[in-house]
Image (cartoon, rainbow over all chains, first blue to last red; front, side, top):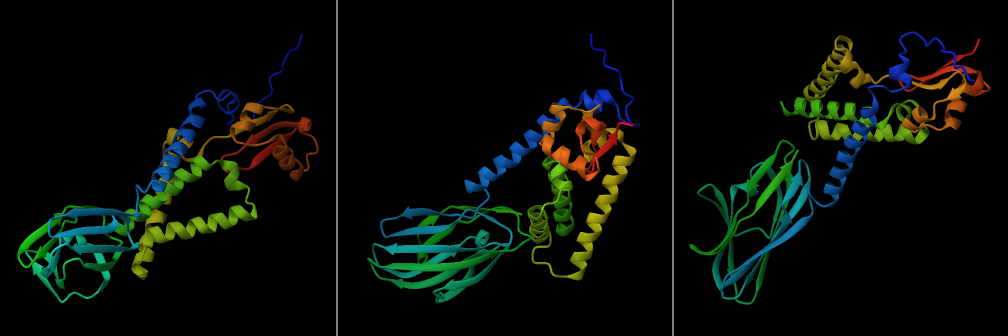
Length: 179
Length: 146
């Protein structure tokens, strides 16, 4: 018959808790659960949930097609590019691209290429006058951005293509900025 | 204002990370761990200060970390259940020369690592150990049989 002699535990060591883990069984599972949450966040990041992979969006009208390639999710401080491609099916005499203020608020525009013929505020939005686009030709506009570090949240980025005052196509879009 | 919030979030995130990574990983610094620690510090710093190069910003971040460090320490001191969460609790690894496998594995330790720690404290055989206890700071205390 084996008799286990109880050793005196060191001071402040409670054997039930520090050896037998009474009341501490859940600790390991809590730790694993938190690790799982972190892992899920990494998987979400790989799936572009936190940006900044660019995505394409296009909208057509009988006279022209507007295609935008830009990220819809970015993070503070990141540099990125937005590309606007206008494919004219019919001649556009005075093509104008109107960018919703969501394309500007909290963002720094480093470059606009090619430089528009003119710029104006149109009811608070930015109107870029692109000029004449012959039928069958494309006009590609590049905007290089940097996200201001203090920007955060979701904003609308509607883009409207006009010929003079005539709306050809409008494309709703949004941008989410993570801190 | 936002720099203080970012510093607070970074502080709490680091606190969470250090608690879930485990005690041993943080106390036993291999060269790679040391480099990793420096890199993590740099990554966190960029997220906190971002493009703020000002002395005011640096002082605000430093002050936020200092206040939160004292606050966490004070909470741990005053509230015992919270102390367990913030600092962890000791864990008995060996009793009367017999390793407690369940507890050793729980901290992702091997018997070889425990034996190496014992040798570092001039104990040649684990059977000569009365108590081996993984402390909250990640070190292992050995109490030899008299």
